[in-house]
Structure formats: C-alpha cells, structure tokens
Image (cartoon, rainbow, N blue to C red):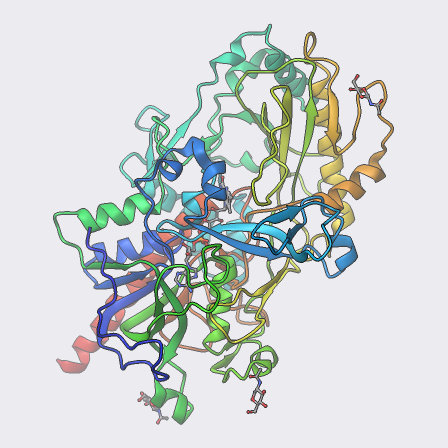
Length: 622
Ligand SMILES: Cc1cc2nc3c(=O)[nH]c(=O)nc-3n(C[C@H](O)[C@H](O)[C@H](O)COP(=O)(O)OP(=O)(O)OC[C@H]3O[C@@H](n4cnc5c(N)ncnc54)[C@H](O)[C@@H]3O)c2cc1C
Ligand SMILES: *[C@@H]1O[C@H](CO)[C@@H](O)[C@H](O)[C@H]1NC(C)=O
Ligand SMILES: *[C@@H]1O[C@H](CO)[C@@H](O)[C@H](O)[C@H]1NC(C)=O
Ligand SMILES: *[C@@H]1O[C@H](CO)[C@@H](O)[C@H](O)[C@H]1NC(C)=O
C-alpha cells in the first residue's frame, strides 16, 4: 500500500508559521467516507494526481470492521470512534430526560443514565462517527436504501439542474453497484461496480408455525398485504424502480453493502483497490492527518476578486481531534500546507465539513467574527439546516425467544402528509435503543423489537456551530428535533408503533405475553399508556444517526444555500463539498448508498469541469 506519511521535513509544532507548501496535487479530497473516498479514487482513475487526506487510520483488514455482522462492536471501538456529544433541543431540562444521557465521571469512565454520581460532568447525547479510511461506512450496519424520488427531484426544482432527477441519479447507483443477489440482467442494477450488495436468506418465512412468521402474517394483514404472499414478499427487491415505488407499502428483503459472504463493502475497498491497481493511478492517501483549514490565494483575497481555494493546511498525527477517545490532552502535531492546483473538495461529513468551512472563513460572518476568523465569504447557511431521521422502536420481552430472521417493511401511516410511505421498520430478536458508550443493551434471549426510521422529517432546524477557532475542538451540535411539524411527525411515529404492537400479539404460544419496555410499557392485559404518553416518550427518547444537510445544495435565491448544483461552494472558486452535508433534505431512510451515488455524480461533474478548463487553456496557448 502506498500510504504516505508526511515527510519529516514538515514544520514542527513549535514553529508558529506553517512551512510553505512543498507538495502539490491536482485535487485534494478531505475525508474518505462515502462522499470523499470514492470521489478521490475516481479522480485518480481519470489520471489526475489526487491526495486523499483522512484523519483516521486503515482498519480494512480488521475483522471488527471487515465482517459486517460486527457493526455494533465497530461503532463502539476506540480504534476509530469519534464521540460527538449532541443536543436534541434548546431546552437543557428536556435533554436531561434522555435516558441515555452520558456523563464523564472524572475517573476515566462514563455514566449513562438519569441519575449521575455527584461531580460528574455532563457530556450530552452520544453521536458516534467513524474516523477511518472509509468513514462511517466502516462501522455502520450497511443498510442500503434509496431516497424517495422527490428527495432527488427537489434539487432539480431548486436549481434547475435536471441531472439531479431521480431517474438520472439511478445511473450512478448502477455504476457503483456489484449486485450479488439478483440474476444478472436486471436493468435497474449494476453488476460490475465496486460496491457489493447482498440480502439475507429469508426462507424461514415459509414456515407458518414460527412465531416470527405469525407476526409477519399479521403485519401483512395490518398493512393491506396478502398474508399468503408474505413469504414471497420478504424477498422483494427493496431497491426496485418504478413510478409508484414511493407509495408502495410492502415487505422487502433488506439490502446491505456487504458481499454474500458477509464481508463489508465500503469506500475502503475501492480506495485500496485503486492504490493496489497495476495501472498505478496517481492516488496518494495520507492517513492520521487532520485538515485544519482550506487555504485561499492571498492575491485574490487582497484585491477583492473571487477568493480561490489553493490548498489545505494540515496537522499531522493520530488522535488529534478531541472527539477521538484516544486524544491526549494538549497533543498537537506538525502543521504544514499542501497545494491543490485544480480544486479542494471537502468531504468530512455532516459535522466536520461545515466546521472546516467555518475555520477557513466561509460561514455566517457574525459567528466567524466571534472567533476572530477573517471572513472569506459570508455564507449564513454553513452548519445550518441539519436534518436527521427520527428513530425509535417497539421493544418487548416475550415469554420465550423468537429466532426467525428480520422482517423488513416500508409502510405509510394514516396521517402521513402525502401518499408516500413514511416508515422503514425492521423487526427481529435484537434491541436498538440509540447510542451511548457500550450500546446496545442486551435484554436477554426473549428481546424482540421493531425498529422504526421515520422518513422525510418536517424539521431540519439543527445546526453545527463553532465553540472556538481551534480545529481540534468539536463543534456544538444541536439537532432541534421536532422544531417544525413535530406534533405531526410524532403522531406518525405513534401510529406506526400502535400498528407494530398489534402484530406482536399474533406471535402465539409460547412467546405471549409480551412485556413491552417502550414506548408503551406492559402487556396487553395491563398496559395503560395512551397516544399522548407515547408521543411524549418518543419526543424525549427519539434518537438518530443519519445526519445530513449542513452544507446544502440550493438555488441562487435561497439565502441558506451553501452549494450550487455542481457541489461548488457559493462565492468562492476551486472549492466543493461532496458528502452527506450536500443533501438539501434527508435522503430517505438511510444515507450511505445515496451519498455514494452523490459522490459518483460529483466525480463526473468535476471531471467535466476539468475538461472545460483544459480546453480553455489549450485555446489560450494555441
Ligand atoms: C453507527 C452508525 C450506523 C449507521 N448505519 C447506517 C446504515 O446502516 N445505513 C446507512 O445508509 N447509513 C448508516 N449510517 C450513516 C452513514 O454511514 C453516513 O451517513 C455516511 O457514512 C456519511 O458519509 P460522509 O462521507 O458524509 O461522512 P463520513 O462517513 O462521516 O466520513 C467523513 C470522513 O472524513 C474524515 N474527516 C472529518 N474531518 C476531517 C478532517 N478535518 N481532516 C481529515 N479527515 C477528516 C473522518 O475521519 C471520516 O472518515 C450510520 C452511521 C452511524 C454512525
Ligand atoms: C486579483 O488577483 C488574482 C490572483 O492573482 C488575479 O487572478 C485577478 O485577476 C486579480 N483581480 C484584479 C481585479 O486585480
Ligand atoms: C479577538 O481579537 C480581539 C482583538 O485582538 C481580542 O480582544 C479578543 O480576545 C479575540 N477573541 C478571540 C475569541 O480570540
Ligand atoms: C404486565 O404484564 C407482564 C406480562 O405478564 C408482566 O411481565 C409485567 O410485570 C406486568 N406489569 C405490571 C406493571 O403489572
């Protein structure tokens, strides 16, 4: 592997002024997740010298990451974990009711709960991210799902750029996919890409005597499907295309970005394959390197012309970011600069991309002024518009275990605002109640849950804001859940929970009675909660892990637009953002596959622009 560590000639930490740039590349990509990793590989494969900078290391061969079944261990692993401590609202009292609020006890351990020991310091609500080659696609569950067509088409409406149509976006999925679950020849799928997709064996559903199958059949009945078709529908392609897909309530087989042997497939594989390719593509990967800001051409800043990004400043070393649990107090590394002759692309994810822009002078002018950061471009939308799927689940303990596979269902609840489905649920013998150090809680062999992801949240009022000008500090993240249309979204979640709970009752002997843990505790015989109580529970306990939209693409007339439709940061040159922060709205139920599609599109857009530039240059020198 050609991983280049920084040369020993780089400036040392003691030197106040960074060394003058000694290295240069056509493109510099910051961050190797679903946004940046595939993009860097694509640019290098097109022949451009590309530097991919990643704060984390490479765990591609580590079974905790390589075997998709270990995703919970991966998300807890200190090797890669970045802990963000987020807020769900502006009301500290409300946030303190979150059952998995986390505290620092001061003796190197966490306290998780509502009754912290004396002297413990409040951290907040844990929001894990993976800092590693491949980004969060290295510790996620790998669930691959398409956004609703409208989630792409809204970009066409905002910007007039028809290349964002859902129909056109599908071609990027076909390009990157290596389908391992359908017979070759399905026109909606790709078979030669770098991203393996696979499904589970759902043959258990043919056995009507199993408690899990009884729940499945009841769910069919409750959602207007034929129970006798359920055993077939559980194999339906969840990535199918068609006019009415977004209005379809159906079972499906959950697709994951893993191969049929259970090996995770992520940008890590693609980057490594690109480095190892005998074609010797001009890709350089710097691991354990924190980008501290984007650099702009001094002359353009001085004479008032459009500022041009010309490189990045980096700090070299492992665990430099304070979200890293391995970070040692006061640790820094040598600072230096690297030049990009064509463009800089920021792909640090929904929390870090806006932070990097702000540290570079691009963001709300008043916020930058607070930290004495000179304004390169006043862009009030940077770090705003943060959105996420609301998540919860009906979790109960049976009188006996249920050991069938997962039921995956997309459905519409009665009060959904449009004809589109609004809940993605998966049911099985697991517990998923959000994130905290050491999650999830094992409630014993009889645990059974239907986890819910709510689609199209009506509020994206969250924000990522600086707490200092120190690039090693974490920003302040507040999701402001349910700020707009919250009662409606909570009502949809309660409708979903009520429906799922009814299906639990079909499990039969020996599983019944179920004793529900939440959102409506107790059994069918003794529970007392009403819809209002469930809504209150979900309002306080909803969690999320699909943050997007903090550097949103938008139209020329939108004050909070950060990017144009070609991912270009508005008001400057040579700078783009390509990752989950670019989506103007939360893209369906799971952002990982949509972000990789967006990355493939960005590669095409950037390469087209490069060709234009080269043509102009040729004309100039002809
Ligand atoms: C526990 C968990 C489970 C998930 N499960 C699923 C799932 O099953 N399906 C799904 O679709 N989505 C899932 N997601 C979400 C999904 O993985 C993310 O939405 C996706 O990875 C976002 O991609 P990204 O490129 O925007 O950012 P990221 O994946 O966050 O990648 C950003 C990268 O940039 C690097 N970086 C950041 N700042 C700097 C800097 N200053 N200098 C250098 N490098 C930097 C980081 O180290 C990181 O590697 C999950 C997320 C989590 C946390
Ligand atoms: C300002 O400086 C930039 C970079 O050197 C140059 O390209 C541009 O033409 C200059 N503009 C003016 C108005 O002088
Ligand atoms: C910003 O600069 C002013 C003037 O130099 C100084 O007084 C102030 O403390 C600085 N603020 C920060 C946050 O560094
Ligand atoms: C409700 O019923 C369940 C199942 O029988 C039982 O486990 C639980 O203890 C009961 N709860 C209350 C509050 O009585």
